[in-house]
Image (tube, rainbow, N blue to C red):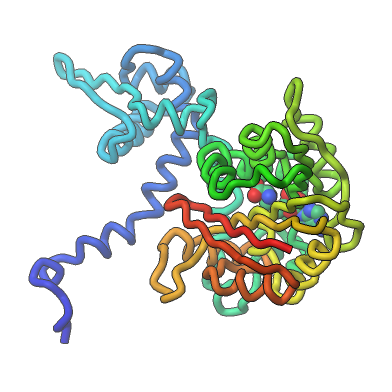
Length: 348
Ligand SMILES: C[S@@+](CC[C@H](N)C(=O)[O-])C[C@H]1O[C@@H](n2cnc3c(N)ncnc32)[C@H](O)[C@@H]1O
């Protein structure tokens, strides 16, 4: 019995207790974001008492004090006691990643996780039992139509686009520079959503043209809400399964393969292969599992997330190599960034 546990683990399961409490930590950060705690502390430019925060955010004094204290304990805020009164202040992490106005803000990602991912994970038991997504149980939407569920309202579509954007603000440069893409002069980001990754690619390769192709309603929303003055990319409405894929030197598939079942992925890659110009290629950006099934932990959580929300899953590099080879691509190269998302390049 328990022969593999160290003496300290026999005394108290520290790691396990931390994991069991993990959801409370996430939800506390989510709640502080939704309440505007980090924006307020950034704007105030000086430490505030719990009473001042409560008054400005319209919360209870007791509730906000407990929340602020937890955020201090996990080193997301700082506190100083002066003559018995606690003054709360931001940290660099909070200012850079949690305040809405920061260019590196993860605010949209947090709002999506809090309001959409969290309710879906509430049905994880059923998702595992049934082996299918929980869009129907959570939101009353058909489980086969995954993007109808994700885009169930304009508000939800914008939240999802914000989530997609957040990732590339911090991981985009690593994907854009994983390989030298300068030989590809025309680039299409298939399912490129709001264009966040496409802009990173355009920034890195200014002599290439970069276009985002996505579903009509997504492109219209991207143009309304995410287009920039003197934008470096252009947009095209389309459907990569049912419509035509325009010819190009390079296709980007970022977080597309993980949404779908194998047969759809093979069909899509074969279609891309035949549209691709000679000497062209495909760049896949996905979170890669280890071949030995032992992680990374975050990617395993992403894979469960695909279970509760889509029809796909996360994979190790060998899956992509197999898929790309079956579709006719060659010279598959894999680059692990060490962050959340990795890159795979294959040539026609
Ligand atoms: C998981 S998101 C990834 C978005 C983006 N590539 C990124 O990584 O931020 C999947 C994208 O595929 C788009 N999409 C889904 N089905 C599509 C289809 N049949 N044709 C074109 N785009 C599609 C969605 O609208 C969405 O933007």
